[in-house]
Length: 162
Image (tube, rainbow, N blue to C red; front, side):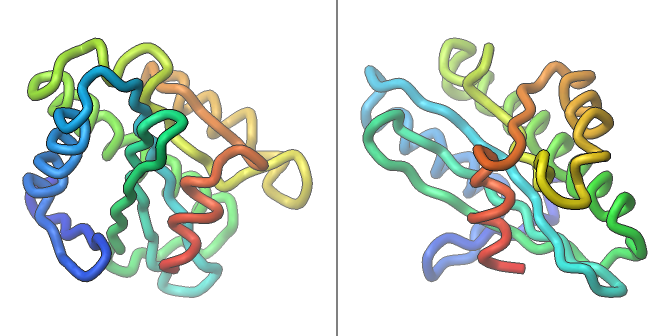
């Protein structure tokens, strides 16, 4: 998955390997701190649909950085299909990040609640009927799922670039 992805950060375009290097560098700059990784995806209701996925690294109580990428246009004609594809996009990237970061930094940084998938669903509005399904998908992969109003990775950061 990672080899063809291009991530935006401020004014640069990064490969997936460069993204990993940036995340590792951010942690190694202050290794004594606590870190969290957030991955969230958002899309617009259009046909075809373009998805934006944001990867955030948070230095708990001391800021953070984020990166984002756009997918090629994908057919997702219904809201349900868009939300499912957003969720799977985030899950796939989160799994890849978790594996690589565990190897490069160590298990203590990004395991057990320190890496989460932010979903663009909430208890208000039409996405409420999808909450159980997408949260179940995320948990089925052994990941933490976060919904609105706390899922800023999807409905704030990724949404900013859709």
